[in-house]
Image (cartoon, rainbow, N blue to C red; front, side):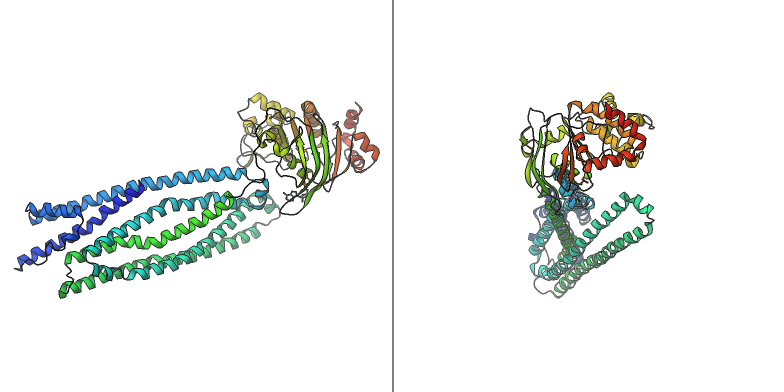
Length: 607
Ligand code: ADP
Ligand code: MG
């Protein structure tokens, strides 16, 4: 439809020069008649007109309309042609530009959807600024192609074809003279364009970098302030910004010469039309050129101004779009390593977790975080994984959630290899509370009920918060459960965040829970309270609790001490105490440190 509208719009616009040319010839003829000259230039060149214009001429000439009325009628015709041309141009924008917005919408959604499918490892190697830039900037550049560029290409080709066709029919010799500067124009456009393209690619890269720099300093604002590095950061940002500015200015300068040069070349064409056409007209040499033809050509040349200057501009738009689409495809073609092709099962995943000789190396760093790790967890068992930072505890949890696939060995739940379990089902039934808590800028209630498919009732939310021992603190907030968290709301303490994250993990009512060091920011007293609450909650569940501190109040079926990705020692609390290894040492150390809590711990241990 858009293409049809463009053709119609151009068709009506292209008739105007012919009507004007006809009128000028007619006026010349009448003046000559008045001066007593015989009719020389008549109808001989009318053959070059379009059918519609011929129709108008036959109406005017056969009805013997007076000279004044003929001029008025032609004027009205010009007006109608302009209105029709404009009307179809309006329709063309309505179809093509609107369509490009729809494409943009789809593309944005597709990319967002694809981003979410990609593995966590993908996010480790690409900066947020880069991801954001591609979904925003690159998509809008591609839209410039599917919308304006496409429109201009069809528009300018049809304008050029229509104009040149009628020019050629009117006087092919003059057409050749007039269009002679155009090859030079085309070459100039091409070379300038390549330069523009090169520069804009560089600018795009600089902008990406600038965005990342800015974004990092906002998220790290507290570090910047506490180290009094505002000025240094500003200098850093300024330096990057300066580079961007320089490149942008040099591009602007290039573009500044671009359009005037176009205008100059078109101006030369107009000059040639008048000079050469005028010479033929005055000298009477063949081919015969009438004043009307010169008028017609001058208008054609002006109609061609925009298409010719738009060639380079459109080409650059298309080049940019191509570069952007390439960048988008780079991500869209990235296939996730973790694919979800297993069907959902009726059976719930409730334990019997087996790590069978698992070895895992992080791809992009080459760090082997887990080495020949073996562990069997029966349904309902509570396991404590303890170890120094960097010993591989978090990696273990993420392997169980299948954020990564192990390089060697395998993990299974309910005698099924992890790879054969539906990924969504796995992640629904294993509740993972990560070490680095992330809460959304939303209400407390919405953060807690995040993992639920439907909106949770207040009672359910509160009960989860109670298990996580954060209910009372939430009641102390201004709007309680409706309090906003994060950038637009209250700032929570590390411990509060952790406990809200725990509540979010518990509300799903999972079969298996994995807590990754998520009580690290909680004081010993609160920890005791949570652990007591959790003990109740976890009774029917399989639990893996990861910590670098000992929970002495909790009875674990097995305690695993991890070191450099392998098991250093394992057993029950009593067994490990007897062994007098790492665990026993840590226990004694912590006991003396927590003198105040000694009594509490001792009393719980006694029962
Ligand atoms: P823990 O949780 O016990 O502190 P981690 O499992 O986080 O230990 O880390 C184990 C090892 O793997 C460390 O040497 C760490 O540097 C490395 N590591 C952790 N996460 C990544 C990652 N995303 N990419 C590369 N290396 C990682
Ligand atoms: Mg960790």
